[in-house]
Length: 380
Image (cartoon, rainbow, N blue to C red):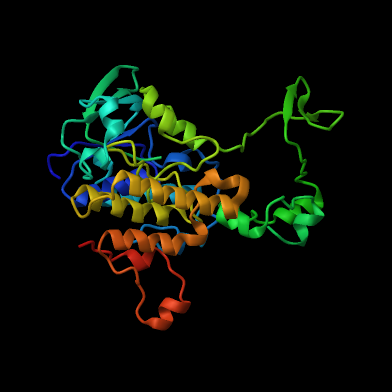
């Protein structure tokens, strides 16, 4: 892949992993990062933020945490870890900081021809026939807009205390696991609720007024000096807004009644030469992202071919049925937590690797899988 031009948008967990594995395959990708630092979402979290996943389950398979890291690393430790990973594997040299991708369009093949293809990218291979490519508009820190041409684009409670404080959700614990709605309470959370230093208010809407924030159903406002939004973001909108073409915008994220139509949670069957890493969630996103990065780089290096478009669309529909059945109204979250090992097995099989990573029958049956089980994953 030495001569292939690959663009990665974003230097977060997914972008760093994708760049590292591409470098190992002889490719020299360009990573566009709008910020001045790497880390993605982690770059903007408060200093008190900590992982909700123990560090052994939240690490790159071939880059363990330093012994000095705590069991649940905080913001600084995570940022140090990601920075060390980028430096160790030469990823840092590929990142163009302060470069924001404004939009992209597919050129060289008209949209009617793309829509009629029976094989992904026209051939089923990662780079297609070579006729089509992505044109990215990128603005640097000074606001100057540049055009880049590339052939590939990658990146972006249930217990008594809950009832006591009116925090029991409408969904079941199983639905929460399926949709990645499970979270670990911060340290001393319920203690602070008891002492009144944290006060919970349940409201679907709120408005601002001179005195502070007025919640739905409340007669008087909550006096506030600072308001912090913890509302998350819409990843599907971020994906959709990248496209200039109305055709691609109309199919990129599906409709509100469907899941995001990604084969293996990475490839859109009808959008050529593009991969999405990091949208689909798990209970340990870094671990999941890395094996996807291995899968996509192996595919790009000619390790396997994708099924035909109809077969991929059928697979997407099967996944949609599962999500709608078990997560009900949260099916668009594209979470793989309950089926994480089964999902990893599918990626391993695609790459020609043995999905059974443990040593022995009983280890396979009883031991927990984690990043270390995929450290020596060598696709055929």
